[in-house]
Image (cartoon, rainbow, N blue to C red; front, side, top):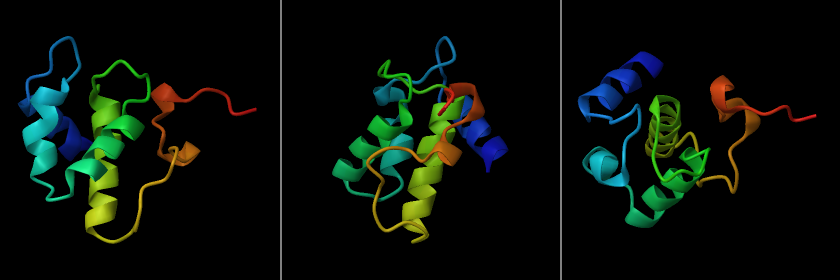
Length: 94
């Protein structure tokens, strides 16, 4: 899934390695999920809270969307589980 997401990310034209909400909106809307859920997905995926998604954060967003659509998840978590946070974004949990 990661390589597919990287290809999608690159096709959206990131600037400085990041996508704005406007750049990602069309791709996220194609999921068919309610706008409220997509907002929550963005909030969860924007791990560094800069208002943009880098490739790893975009991959998290696509994972969450896929999990909801395939019913592997019935609702979004309040915070990302540690194993969903990309290694590049993890801080020591201990």
